[in-house]
Image 1 (cartoon, one colour):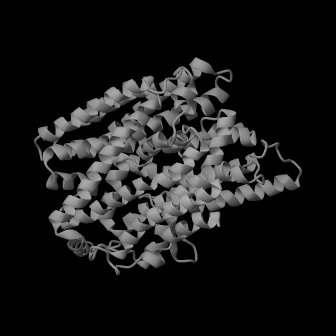
Image 2 (cartoon, chains in turn purple, brown):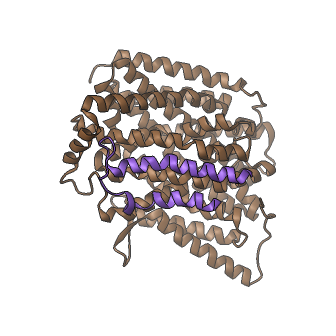
Image 3 (cartoon, rainbow over the protein chains, first blue to last red):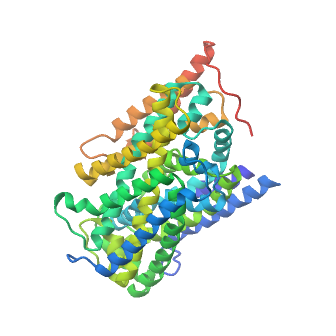
Length: 56
Length: 499
């Protein structure tokens, strides 16, 4: 589980098949850009979850 | 643009003066005996999570990044955004592997990757190879910080003839060299506070004010799409042939990043493994900033900039949309953003040279004050070397070398990271793999124009040469390790790293 929390965001970051599209846009920004930007805090939260599991 | 912009320059010089003072004061911060190499070159391993956050943020997100990432996006659009998946990948890796490396290094007094490798595999040639790879990869990186600094100084209207054109960065580097010599790693750690706050301020201002003036993001991307239309390899999204280059460049750059001496210096100066883990969670804040800076490349088209040198895109946007004093502030942030990594890189290189080249091969008894003194002198030499590259060679030389540097740096991945988790590898086999990877990687990239992307035979896709060479490296290391083991000739290894 802990490993999964670290690996899944990485796998998503390496999957342009998923995010290489213009729609849906957010405030006029194509999906390609905002989705990758949104993945940054999402990955950080997943790492945080792994960290909290570690401390238990 | 030909006149010096005094308003911007005054603000710029004021901030530069401020960090110079900080650089010298830093010697007294968290006071330690600067006559010891781990105090001078590693801050005595006393930086808690917050200081480490500022230091690593200032160290990894360099001035050159701030200039080069929007430049690439300006030039080709979506492909330039590979920096974003790259910065997503680095933190899970940092979280999983580096607290462990930190603990071994603290327990055994290692201050460089070479120190660790020698302890782990008892092989001083592997130590030397790891050290030299790091040194050679770092030199052009320092030179590129100068390139980044020069872009903003030029944007302020500074012009000089011949060697005079480099006068400002020479002065800046001499001052930097002096306080780095004096204060060691404490100087960039303290200056990083100022630099990072400045970068956050100007980036937030830029992504709010510039789009407001340009009619919003919808308008910006629409105009950029027109600008990319008809340019090969450019566009708002990737074309399918770019998928694998995009993926492998992000992955390869991420695997190499924390192996650079300056990254390791930042990591090893942390006060605990927990501080590193917390930073793997908190450092992505800088990645968001970097992604937003990348968008400046798109905005450049909407602003109608037609640039011969795409690297001017960020500075030109500031001059267009901000009052001069704020441009000066942003330029100072970028220039100081060059000083912090340049200082850490020179310290990392100095530690590496002193510990892993000078000590084992020239003066085995080296320790104490003499060891710190040699490191300090080497930090000066490294900066002079970077300046010499700027004076004597075109900027393209440093850029090409840095590209090669990335391909080389990733080749030490097996020796450092595999060694943390596996006992299967033999030091001699890792050395052979490393050398094979270095040669093969260089050969792949080499040509009339250096190309980091190599076609994969039979698959019809391009792959980052560094990863390609790493595959050979690992294959050689694994095969030879198995053969050595089968022949019963395994070298003794340091005790299991353990959890």
